[in-house]
Image 1: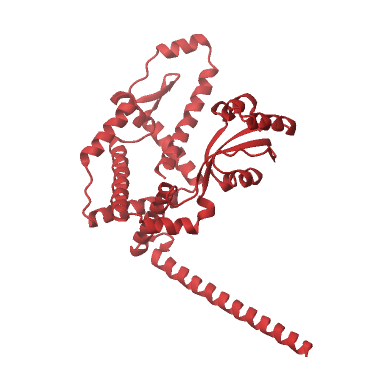
Image 2: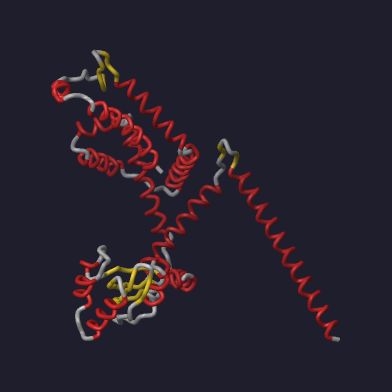
Length: 347
């Protein structure tokens, strides 16, 4: 979210910069040389016929454009939610006696300065985007705060082998991945020709470089890397996921052409997918924890209290369950009535 908000300011700056570039493009070469040799006063961003546009006026203008763009993108609610989460995490760090390292924050700040080409260039960047060094440091500290909070949470809420196995069994169809290579050609005749060469023992990668029309991976021997079943067109995935390791398929037709697929590897067990599942479960647990922090707190905004919203949500859930229960009851009665009518007709 901070990147998005910063992006709004950046867009506003680019709008102004674009206007300036268009004006420069319309001047003659002699005038351009004169401008380059001229020097602006320290408190100005431009000068027109001897009259200055001050840096203060520029800052007011860029703030206006940033606010306007933020309004168009309806960022107010998102920014407020971000600030609420900042506060909740800061309070949780304090509650759990987790200290932030000021030296690490200072080191990160200095690294940013170096990345911008030194103090002078960094200060110019801050001035161009109407930011203060203190605000920039505050943003770095908040990023560090999130990092420390997440590290603390992960350390104290480790994913167990049972959780990994249970998650795999529940989401197996979505999780299984294969690593495959392919050779894509335009017509069936060429596909059969390539397949015959493969059957005769020629190298798959070499033939991929020679024949494949897939420019994204032909030079890499047709390697596609790991992918899930739903990430490829159905005709391709259906064949790829049935192959055994190192097995090569017959030509497969899709809307892209004809593919010859080779299976390099398959991740089809909880153990092989342990890293991916652990990452997903970590994200899920942390998201649920942040939600709990919010629900346990008393948060009041212009839209009302989170407690009122939760109460309304709970009431709606209960109402939905009641409606579903009545629908099931009515369905059951209809079935029983139908069965009874059928029996009477048979008699």
